[in-house]
Image (cartoon, rainbow over all chains, first blue to last red; front, side):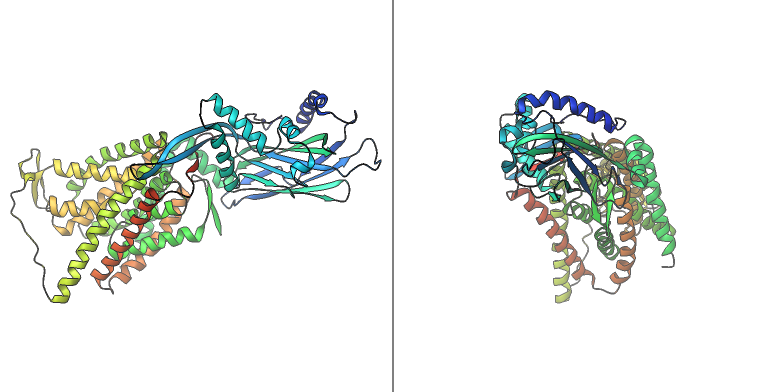
Length: 274
Length: 309
């Protein structure tokens, strides 16, 4: 269920996602010791589906709203638990390790993570270990532990000897840069059915499609899953500069030089009476 | 007040950038130095990726050297022929320098190479400047007047072929030394994002024996074209020129340089030079310690800029 390496095209509609999810649910449910045949559903939405990175972008904050829709009626069951994962587009990230060579610390080892999510938020209403078992979380692909496993597996495939250490440090550094984020009080229930969760998108986050998956648990058993997507994209002068620099680099170089010459000429004009 | 830099892909305080441009501009206006060798390390300290710092700083130097060389041109202080010969070498140096950065980026050692170059050059320049200003301060305090050592004209430079007449400099020398000097300075511009005036000016005075009146103007003339070329090469090969960052540094730099030039005329030269030397050495030591002291974190993430983003 983990979405590493999976790119959702922006054209893909929410309906299609839900449909594909239903398939996944049907496939997954027999393994989950699901309590009841009729699953509870969740309805959610985000406060924003488009994050625009422009010249004044310094990160964004998105709130996810949701409500549980109980099909079997409120027959005095335990309070629900909600676990939300928000995953950014896959990215190629290198993790470098320094060691001392002739008195100088330099990068000597490198591990490339080809399919690591560029952003990962993990929000829940209480600590994950109180919500369900760790085996369940791993099976569902929820949490940093399951990401670490995935990364270790990836590293073993690419032949790195110290996959475990590299994966752990990778996650640690991503957390340090606010790219990965864990909040066990990130989901707040407003009343019995309505809940909300807030998460931050840092300023240096990559553009692309983001997927929020909302998991509803009762007594440690997954009851239902919903999801919601949003898109981060550059716009305005930001987009113009970035795309010119990458698609027409020669023109961009010439324009940069012209800008500098104009600035230099302007300066000597303004301060000419010296 | 933050601004998002489109190429560095990070959000940074506008006032910090304007302030850095202003301070370095102030120093360069006061001492007549280009300032690239201070600005690039400061950008690196503030978290800009070294490769972006180098390429963007080259772009900023185009602006400051354009206004500088216009002032020199008006006073007829540019030896165009010498400038073109230096530029000829500079083109080759710049191409090699930018290629080297691209190569070191690919093997993941670009930060190390840039830092090492800075430690070496700032150490040499800062050390020499400090030595010189201490000597001057000592001499003036004991009332001695230093006599310029004028050696004879028998230098190895005169034995080289391709002799050319440089009218403006009143020289008849081989074109090889200026081409080599230009190439070396171009290499520094490509790798370090500096104009290279701090190397070129002494080389022109002591090696080529050019009249001091045309040295500054001629070196600025070469720097305009070499840093312009370096900017274009970095933009095409590395996509590391951040126009927004460059513009902010230019604005801060231009204003700072004007204030610096006015302040500099009221202050004692040698004490100030000693201060600049100390500042250069502090930057050098800081960069050097970062290489030698065990880092807080031996792991670091590197997202390849301009790839897959």
